[in-house]
Image: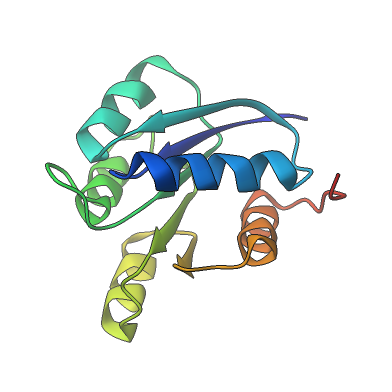
Length: 130
C-alpha cells in the first residue's frame, strides 16, 4: 500500500525537509502534497484523498491547532491521522493537541529516524529504509 501525505507548514524550507525525510524513510508514498497553513490544508483535503497529515502548529492564518479542531468537526475528515511537528515543546501544548485528537507530536528539531518511527506508528506499518 502506498500513502498520500499532506505536509502543512508555513516554511517552504521545512516542507522540503519533511518531504525529503518522508522520501528517504522507505514509506511507500503515492503523493506528498503540501499546504502553507491550515486553511490551505482544508482546501486541499476537500479535493484530495490524504492518508496522513504532518502539520506545524504556529502558522499565519489558520494554525495547526485550529486545523485539528476543524478536522474533528468534519465527518469526512476526522479519521485522517494528524502528526504535529512543532518547535513548541511545552507539555501543556503537547497534551492539548493530543487531547484534541492529534495522533502524535514530534518536536523540532528532530532526527529523521524519529519522524519515520512516528509516521510508521501512526500508519501501523514498519518500512525498510532505502
